[in-house]
Length: 131
Image (tube, rainbow, N blue to C red; front, side, top):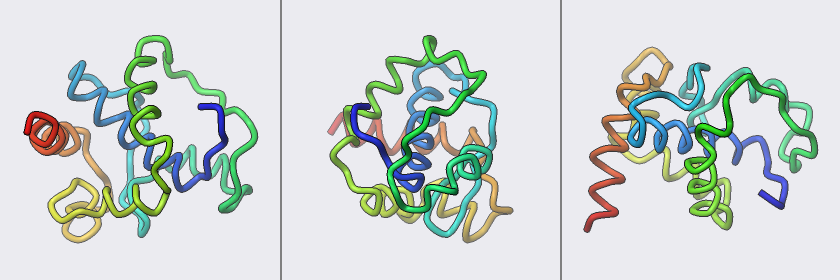
């Protein structure tokens, strides 16, 4: 992505990368847990790494042990799809009734399971793309 993103937007993009990767490969893009926070799904370790930026664009790289080459197409797809979408629009998308975030935040233990993400993306996003 050529333009920096805020931590808020990054968190939502990570959620979508996880969802796309789960439905395309059956495996998660990364092992970190996603949690349901007030403004949507969050990968806490990544969030805290960039929390000093506040709502400003992130200007540094994050070193990760994730094999990015194996999920590059999924990352590129998510970035191409959402690069012009505002962070608040992504928050609204993740907050939709019935979403994994909605369930974990309102009825669950605050953790968003990969099974729920995969099921939701498989039915909701594939269904919407096929329509």
